[in-house]
Length: 292
Image (cartoon, rainbow, N blue to C red):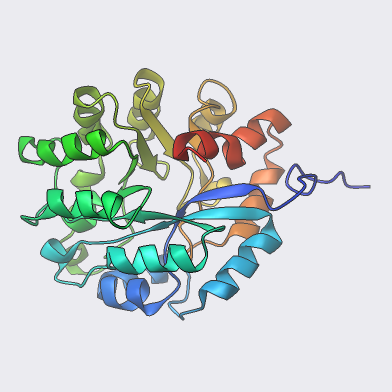
């Protein structure tokens, strides 16, 4: 008889997805545009929209009790409209037991610092998401230091994109997006200069996984998630570090709706990590990082 998994033994849907996007047109069509269709084609995913009620039902069935819903503002670099922070906060307010709301500010906009303050003080958002490739900026550049100082003072965490991006994949010139901004070493200066800023690097940062692992090991304020990759495709060294040296630093994430929770969790379960490590990756590390 097959033994029940760590999630099946939990008394309620317990896992926390640290990386989820809107299954609605606000993200998939408006903010994403043609570059999102490119990504969907590479994932073999559909850009068909869905409701939040269906999303939550799907997550609960898979044993997931909460998801971080990420804002998006890459308007300056892409010309596409953002997913408004007020919208993220409204969705969070409609489903407060499930969603943790993260805002997004465009670092190339003049009002990015003021908008960051508004996100936390007026909208009560929990953190921020940055996608450096889509937003077209180097987080280590000195002109962005006032933004990092402000977020550090606000006392909330940030998610930075790590590695290559399927946005614009296979389009001529990658639709002008530059993958150099996904190098996690560009975040190392931020982590060093703002040691109270809690940083989560989203995704195994292909082709810079080793740099990412080195940062997570050396910087006490840097963490990573496993989103954007099905577990069977994640680099063996990343999985080894997750099971051993970095078991307190790695978190579960999907990149929903490009990847869905049930098949991701099934593949993760097949890796046969020790149960204590599974609990850390699936919810305990996220609970500590998010202050839940």
